[in-house]
Length: 84
Image 1 (tube, rainbow, N blue to C red):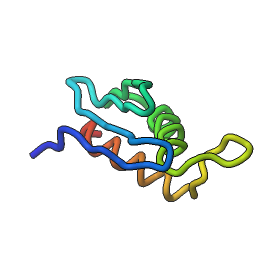
Image 2: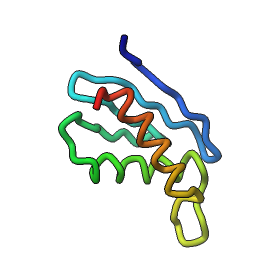
Image 3: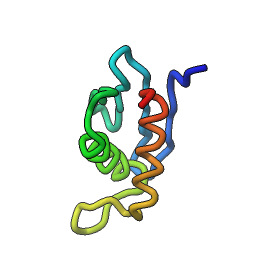
């Protein structure tokens, strides 16, 4: 069983994660980023970090208004759809 798509409702818009042949595509605020299954964890974390900005909002310094645990929750959903 595979999860084909997840939509996470956020403060500044929705984040959509769709399965592709290579992994997943993350769409947030009309920006699409491809996440391949063979990307390093750091590369996938960077995508989750930016997606967390949309989901949780940002601080005055432009960082996600989220804890590290919340960013890892977003990362887990991306990896779940991508099949990592």
